[in-house]
Image (cartoon, rainbow, N blue to C red):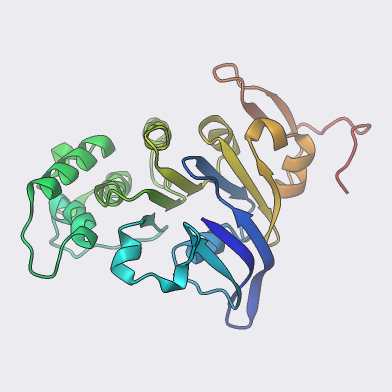
Length: 264
């Protein structure tokens, strides 16, 4: 998945100009940055919800705009920030909607569909909620159900915009571990994350955005330092190795050594 010299705007408000980015295949890419840095806007361009006013986005070397909607839905699963479900819809019915790209207009549910729904609910930890109305679930439960629907789509690319929203800490780490497992099985995972430490621990490719542009990208161990965190997040900090994984761990509230070089 590639963005080539794209300009992204909402009406007269330009978010990004001349943005170029290559997402590595079979990797877990985390997009991080301050609020309004262009993270979600970039993700919307990658799933064709926002058409660049200049430049182009490519999927497997083919311009994104040339895909038919259903063909694109068989390639990319997308979980946006805000979702709503009909009042009476049951969990299993919502998860089953992830199978629509694989079915014709008049086809019936197949064994493959049933298996995909069952495995997706198990992976997201919502099997016991299968017969409950989505509208009656807690925010965290609903989020896991939506994740299950995206998993049931069984796409080679999975894009998620702040997927840990509403999840308690245990479920956040369960979800991120699941995304890492999907990466290990060959899927390309792209997620907008707010927690830089979670991004460093679970992702193998980091895209740090600032003011609508890619400020830095690469493996977390290669690019995350005190200067980057101050420039991208505006946060005085200290970087230490994560005692569990050895990946960069950001300790906020501590200024870097004033003698340390600046990127400016």
